[in-house]
Image 1 (cartoon, rainbow, N blue to C red):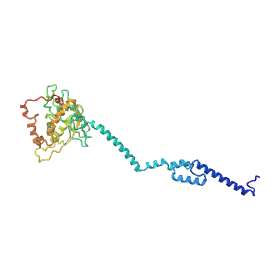
Image 2 (image 1 turned 120 degrees about the horizontal axis):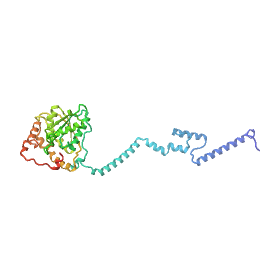
Image 3 (image 1 turned 180 degrees about the horizontal axis):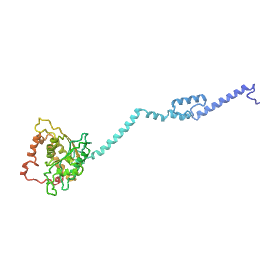
Image 4 (image 1 turned 90 degrees about the vertical axis):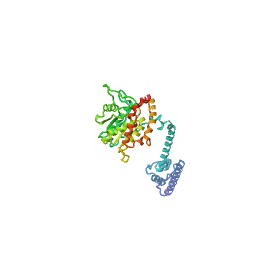
Length: 363
């Protein structure tokens, strides 16, 4: 017989029935949650405690995140990677490994292409190497830019000489104020006669090159001609005697082609270092920098000229007989007029021999 929960006699039994029903339902929910892998009990108090625990582990996770997903995000595989990436030593190891791998690849590539590159010691390929050029004009600039002689053509400077002049123009334009002088050198060469102008007069190489510079924008007042020399030693000596010593020009830029630069360095370095009259005097206080430009000669002509330079350059090298005979300007001038067959009077007593026709093309 049914009765109401408010019935006084049936109330205790009714309450017992409701309590048992709730316990049975809670047990069924706990069992169901475990079987489906929920991983937490559905009882209100325990559920709240676990939610609070996960929130403390990772405050950035929303409290309503399901239990399995929350466990994965807070302490699973992904977070282990993040923790590793946050460690400096781990990152250092990773990047060190990558750098070592790249270095190994570069070394392997270099071992493949290295033998194919030209060697500076091989005279047959020396002209292929990029010429030396100081990175910039020094802050104080130069007092003068010297262009050693290289030959003439009927219509003006040949290509290899024009390359020297273009470099001199570049240096002049980039130099600070006061601008340097540009010194052109040489009467000509003993290997062939000078060309003539419309009036039948000889055109000296220094004048031809000076005219080229003026047409390219260098003011005439900035150009000094040295029109007495006939070869490299004369280029250096007469430049010093006629221009740099009297004017106090002490910082010089010397411009030449690569094929001619070893002899230029040997000669100019010595001529601008020796004292005037006695070895007891201090050496001349000159500072020289050398600018190399491309050779601009045909391959066969270049090879012939390189052979000539290989024979003549050692004569002027450190420790050679030429330097032993020319330890001062006085001795150098004596050697020039006594031994150098471009100037010594004894040259007139000998028959002039024709030069190598291939070498002649480089003048």
